[in-house]
Length: 223
Image (cartoon, rainbow, N blue to C red; front, side, top):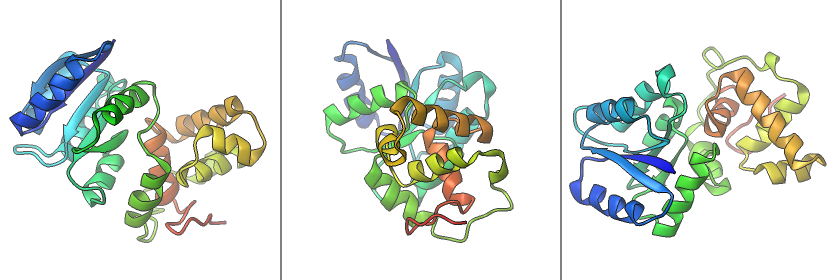
């Protein structure tokens, strides 16, 4: 059973999401909140698998709520998915930096929402190749902040390579094909890179790749 918390200041939006999720076998909505502060309280009380959080809310924004959830060791297993009305929105990138596992447009098709919840609950990041290339690539085109980004020296050559490929939007299967290794080996390299860098999930790994300058917004690889 995948347990989901809904955090959105629009009652009608929460009701729509709840009706859809409650009708699905294997998904349980554990509670709702109308602002970021109450959303954090809800997540701390229920410790859901997934928290669907609106990016712009009163009292506390979705980004700050995400940051507090990601910073709480007791909530390490909670995956945050940001809800937004806009496809290319710098708020989304800031949310990924804060610890979100991905984002969804509010007009997402029901089938896509359900699939997204399953993907994130399974430990993957909700970042399609197109999202990675357009959204993240656009907003990290600013000079990399190597002063605050973790160092690259802790990664092996293979781990650097898979991190760069993940940042370009490749799946584990595509990384495996590119590097001529098995998908399991590719997944292992990605997991080890995440562990060394303290990344919660693949989304955090992608953000690191851009912020450290390993990958540029134009798809190149530094060094």
